[in-house]
Length: 486
Image (cartoon, rainbow, N blue to C red; front, side, top):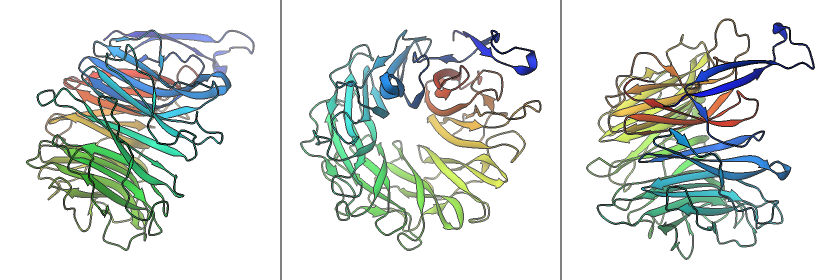
């Protein structure tokens, strides 16, 4: 891929630069590149989607007057070798004083779909969920649409997630599924809607948590779909006091849902502990779609990683979840699992501090979670010597990659900033390549690189992230080969 030449102005007192004089400019060639055009603004909440040769990125930044966040988009053609020379603002901002942020993105073929939070309709800063789409690979966009039935912004809607189901061999239609949480009845509840090709939304949103509406906090839904009309949504829920994990599912593209949602973090009384960091994945290649939900909870003292599974398309789930981290139960803190599932294989990655500093660990099963192999540590520096955080898994069949943020630093750097690292497996996550490799390509530990978003497609791993090397928070991109790690 083309290399970008970045000239960073580094002010160094040890270099003898006097106040008021020009700083030393150090130019170096990088394998990564900035892809936003926000200048002195700060980007946040990046999201990534890949379809064919097009790499789609969406984020919010505060370039508009008053430092207000709005949602922006760019596309990298040719596998990310050619990015747009300007960003497209996705959020409408009709009043010139609204805030739009926290986008989610989905793509299929030449179509791109984005949802986000937007306070344009409220006098009180309440958020609504808005949606916009393009059918020509992001060149032009349809008018944005209000998804939530709240034209006056009377309640607060947050945390939208969007996925798309598309099989061109079956139908040219793209079915979109959107979830969020809002407080129209008091405490937050989880809601769902569906669209075909960006229009024909449901006439009324469907509430997925089945306790009394507005009675308890139900929030942060995550959604996944299979190839036969199955839709699965999991979320955090405090109806019994502490935070539990619940799921609901539909067999028929979201028309009908379970009359009673299902608690997944069994084994103790409801609300007796707190569970967070819910994530979900579906194995579409299994004989019946298999759904997996993972989280961390504190039932044993420290945080442990738990997983529940359904191997019959969400009909039945385990009465008690499986503990995934295999050190002393509750003896350390294990956080924020990431999942990958394909063809009866399921992988779970997380970070924990069993060896003082946080390391990235992974555990896998090759029989749909019936039994589990040994844990593997993925970061290859000295165990426990630096924090390695927030692993994210992506894959295509048996090719899998893990990406994370890492605070290791050279011995001559006194206070380091996080960089990004990754590893690749080509056998379904059971054997990984020798050494982890850095993704961000500036001098090690000199600037914050964080919040990576990763997608594997074909022979490449695509990553975008927030990067401070030029002073402000910018959006950077890199493409790496799954074969060579370069």
